[in-house]
Image (cartoon, rainbow, N blue to C red; front, side, top):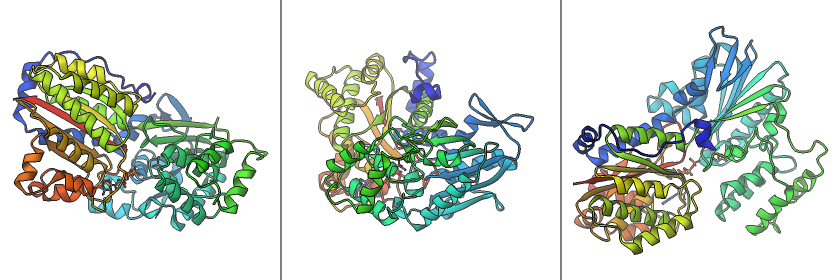
Length: 518
Ligand SMILES: Nc1ncnc2c1ncn2[C@@H]1O[C@H](COP(=O)(O)OP(=O)(O)OP(=O)(O)O)[C@@H](O)[C@H]1O
Ligand SMILES: O=C(O)[C@H](O)CO
């Protein structure tokens, strides 16, 4: 769906007409440098400014706001609210574009974000000095708190005061659920926070977590849209969820919820929380099905996904082609255990290397690769397309993917999904020689922060095991402790780490596999 929405469906890969020149270009730069360029172009494509400019425009008369192919009348009637990790930059871009039409705005963004953006010199992501947009910072560590609650109440108040003449622009990005808490009484903020924490710790998916959050919230699951009715509502959504489901991202505050109380009870039972529910939660759930207003309706809302992992990958693919790689996007929905995902990428690298060096792929490994692909159940995986492209290639190959694998923490080390994935792929690649081909795997979080570290991710080559051994580092010991960040800090003085600082955007992670025959 996202591909169609964004007009990004790709034609099958054909040989490049300028293949000779491009291949020379690819071979003149080091693979780590090239992977860094791909990451920068991926992130650059989903920065708030470019994204908003792609979908929003004011017509020359200044009387119409164009959102894709829809037009909305402007006459001192524009209001703005927003919540999410990327919303400060989105609001700054909206203010730049629509400032003179804006009457008032309120946004809820993570604690410390303005100072971080300022320190990074990203002034284009800051609001103007006398902005009409009020900023609340809160939800430290992605958990709803009193400050986020105050922000939610200000957002609700703004929405409820609107009339049919008004237009409300809603800016939404990942992290929005924690930044827009408004529990339905008698549920308290603390009770909701506790339930969310318990569900997350027991492994609930973001879909399950947000189903519960919606049932207990005044503003999620279409509640914000309802509060703004009869004003027209345009929501611009930056997706941080695989498949870009608008009802899940930030718990869908402008999307009518299709979940029933039964769905909630199933989830609470699945995670062993049904028996110990606070009385207030039971009361709200019991009331929900008998709510005389019925579910929220959202006919007055236009929800638009303005950025996603696929958009970032498409830009990185373009950049890879410009660098002379034959480039294929494998999937923008990589999920699953990081160990399985790492094995999958290592087998894919091995098979691609075998084709490039005419060694021929081993049957058992091809079978395992397909088994892992089936096990991971990636809905949009283009494995055959990638293998075909690899089989027909003589020069450098770039396979791109994105998503959010899961790390089940066992140790007490420092790391993140991306660094752990890279370390695991590197360890797998070193198991057998790959022939005369250079192979690099890169994994980086588009928000610029991988887990609780200040690196965005890391890159590895097939030489990782020997490089580590030369410095007395044992990758297996670091993996057992989930200590990938410490490993990469020590390996060649941190040269394999990707640092970009907080990027001000967030469309999950990017994975690049680069292969170049020697
Ligand atoms: N030592 C570690 N090694 C590997 N992964 C870790 C480690 N510590 C935390 N993580 C992982 O980091 C993730 C949390 O990091 P982060 O704050 O970047 O979350 P996020 O999912 O990227 O947030 P968002 O999607 O809202 O941007 C969790 O998935 C957690 O399992
Ligand atoms: O805020 C949230 O609910 C998550 O980041 C998913 O969008």
